[in-house]
Length: 208
Image (cartoon, rainbow, N blue to C red; front, side, top):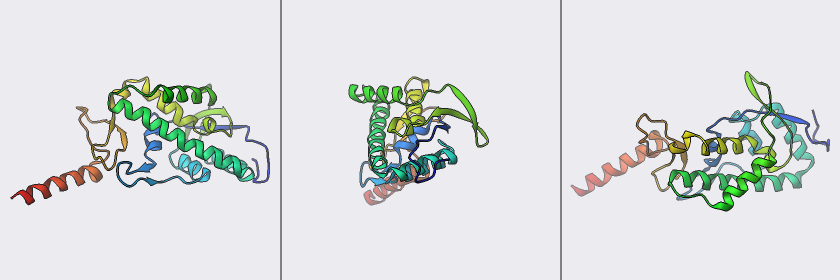
């Protein structure tokens, strides 16, 4: 394993993609329609989020963290590009949710990033399950490979018809509508759904 002073890039990583991972990724920015609240502020926090989201093994994240600790300027650059990519993914998924054509530039950027990310060819053990063993690339496409795969898998699958944007115009989180009738409106009934109910109740009381 590389140390923090080792300039060598990690040789390979095991990453564990989930089909809905890109939703979790774009929602690391909350309250997009009101007072945006950022969850990620550094490359270290991004890697930590990937571990907590089970998109990357702890060992892989540690090796990358050590590499970026030895190359801080590159860490800043890659993190900035990762946030730009997150917003590109958000726009693509939001276009699906609103049944509007995606921006050609966003689709071009996604295709380019997919080409630069590691390919899914070799399975390996990952914690208690399996993941894809890919050649490590200390680039934004290499780091974000699981989220890029997730986005592409959603766009080409029947899941695309289930992509929704929260009806709370202060929230605007994206989610997969897994309700039986496909009529879910809120990212969470416990959060935005209850707020909407409370607001409707307030308006009814005020009108009386």
